[in-house]
Length: 254
Image (cartoon, rainbow, N blue to C red; front, side):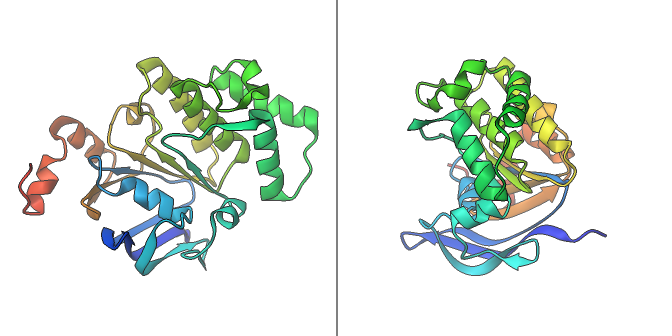
C-alpha cells in the first residue's frame, strides 16, 4: 500500500477567536481525486487556505503532513516550492507581469531550472489550446481585464504548467456556464492523467463533477467532516442536498 501524500490529523482552526474547523481528519495518496463538498460557509475554503499556509488563520490543534513532513507552520512560498498549488475562487489581477512570465517564473522558483523559451512556449500553447484560450492571453497582464471564465482557465493553465504534486481547486466552477465548465474539466482531466498528482476539489456544486473521475467524497458541515464516501455520494447530494447531514448533526435548518 502506497504512503499517504497528505495527512490532515485532528485539525482545528480559528480566525478572530472563532473556531471554524473542528477535528478534521483527511488522508490522500498520489493519483487520488478527493472532493470536499458542503454548503456555503461550511469551512471548505478555510481548509484550502490552511493547507497553503495562509497566515490569516490560526491552527489551534492538530497537524498537516505532506510527503512525511510536518508543514503546519510552513509559509505559502515554501509550500508552493514543495509542489502544492491552490487555485483561487476569485483570482487576483496582477498588473505589470504577463501570464506567460508569471508561469515561467513560478516554474523556475519551483524547480530551480532555467526553462528554454521555445520549449516552454510550445507546452504553454498546447495547454492553452486544450483550454480554448486565445493565444494572445499569454502576453496580457495576469488576469487584468480577464472575464470570470478566462480567470478560471488561467488558474487551470497554471496548474497544467506547474504540474504540482497536490492541486487544490477552490470553487473552480463557480460563475461558469455549461460550456466553460466542460472546457475547464478537460484541463483538470489532463492533470488527472499525471498519476503522481493528487487533486482536492472544493465545491458546493456538483456540476463540474459530472465530467471528472472522483475517488472519495467528503462532506463538511459547520467546520466538521460529517461523511466520507465514494463518487456515489456526489449523486446523493445532487438529489437530496445537504439537509440530511444537518439532521444527522441534530441541527435545525434555518
